[in-house]
Amino acid sequence: MIAHKETIYTKDPSNKKMKVIREFDAPVEAVWKAWTDASLLDQWWAPHPWKARTQSMDFKDGGTWFYYMEGPKGEKQHSRADYTGITPLKEFSGDDAFCDEKGERIENMPTMHWKNTFAKTKDGTRVTSELTFPTAAALDKTVEMGFKEGFAAAHQNLDELLERNI
Image (cartoon, rainbow, N blue to C red):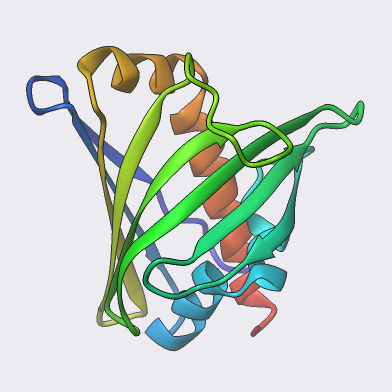
């Protein structure tokens, strides 16, 4: 059993940004695959006891990942990520929004732009996620909704998945 690493958050409200850094004890190829393959994302993306369920995924520039998180009582929160740029094994970016079951954006929920960078380290891979929000209020609402705790829990799920040598 590997020791789980810490997820580090840096909030920059004046620029409507948050940076999240996390290291994993696995090669870039394995970490990249876990972030870009729907069958693997479904195994770690949602914090327990929630489950991620991919409805469709087209991982390419201009493609979309449409999924929902299912709670322990069957509740569902749909989301979509629209990919805006991909450099294989290096980085990908996209726009993320909460949506309804048809994939239509929910207007009163926060949106964000993600840029995820993957870098080889001495012992594995560092993933840096730079999140940019349309407003400081959207950043604050995302944090208030439990983003930090949920993403850290998902990272622990990913540690466990990588430990099984995906």
